[in-house]
Amino acid sequence: TDLLHDWEFLKKRNEGIQRVEDDAMAMLKARAAVEETYAKGLRKVAAMPLSADAGTAREAAEGLRGLLLNKAVQHEELASKLLGDTLEPLAHLRAKQSTQGRAVAAKVGQLGKDLRSVHDRYHGAARRYAKAWQDACERCSEYTSTGCQLPSELPVEDTGSGLVSSNKEEPTALPGACAPQEEGNAPPRKASRSKTSVRSRADNLSQWLLPTEEGRKAQLRTAALDSLDHAETSRLSCHDTWTSYVSRQRQAGLQLQSALTTYQALEEEHIATLKDALRSHMVFESSCLANQQYDVQALMPTLDAMDCSRDLVDAVLARIRELKDERQQVLRQRPSRRRGYPFGAALRELSTDSARSSRTVSK
Image (cartoon, rainbow, N blue to C red):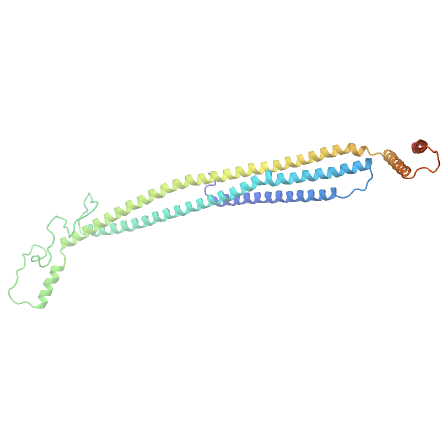
């Protein structure tokens, strides 16, 4: 929870993890390419012609050719396992890291925008409430400056219309409805039957239009009550926005903890998958080396069996057999010129010559 307010650090760490996975996949791909190239080179070497004659040297050379072919197969299998069993889990994890990392970053960004929006609404409601309260204070101060007092129980909403006096008297009559009264306890003015001037009529009209002291107090009282109602409405609106802001903060805290848990799970999976990938790499490498060591050990007896004397004897005997075959062919194609010379005698002479040649080689 210490990192709930340090999302830039978490975001950079997640991006660093993705770069580590990219580097690991690039390394494994390069290693697999090297193994494939090495296997192709071994096959080319194994395909080279061998000019050794039959014998132990020829057997050793053929064994070396087989060793090279088996080694090429081992390296090809190593490359295939690196690209399959080792690289594919890392590639899957890399795609998952990218998708979930972007989703968490977008979620955190949207949470920040929502909180700023609710915060701005609350501050707007608070400014309106402060302004309405200041206006209500000014209205109430104007009303109380006339010597009147506000009622102890203020109405929530004033639905009345017209001017209301403080001592519950009848409202001031409008011009034309009845004759207006003068200020104080003066009797009502009687209408003059004589003709008056235009100026006197104008004075009477202005006197009718001007509010009385009671009417002015009623206006101030109504304005004060209205301002108090408006201030109370603003206060309730501000309280509602504050409650919404606090609730949104709590929800955002829970969602941020969920996002932090997601980041932690991604990093744990990254470590576990990378560990398995590198361990499998070493297992495949050791298996390849063990197979190659077994092939080398199998070839060693063939190399130890190389013998120059044996190869020479085999070569001479092979040559004798060739000469014998050639003589037999010659005798079959050209019969003896001496009359009465038996064919069995010729074969005995040939066997005698072969025995003499064998004794000479053994000496």
